[in-house]
Length: 124
Image (cartoon, rainbow, N blue to C red; front, side):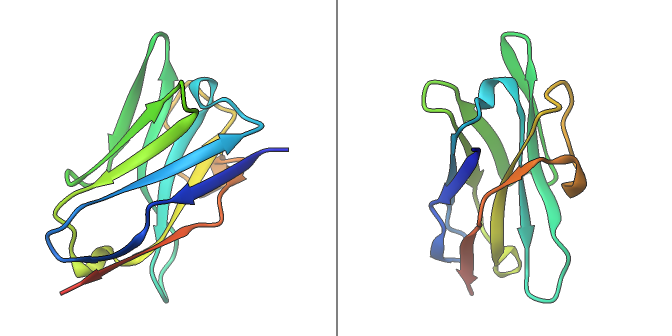
């Protein structure tokens, strides 16, 4: 059984930083695609960043230069580093994993597993 557990969310002032973590069990991130999405109240879930397996390394993409995704294979954990946070970044952030590991997955329907989410609130 695959489980993804996010952590690291919380309340932060505008301009601050947070690092979200996503720990996996039942799945090895080094051989899977992973991504972060977010959903603000009244809005659709949107893609934030994704990472794919790429031989000995990893390719990643982020829709925002303030955010970056990374992976620690030894800890089987994916991270989302968020810098210079703004109030509009307030949302529930979700980690996702997909068995299709050879490309970065941008659509939520492409992912097979989801965490329960972690709340990020940015105050002005």
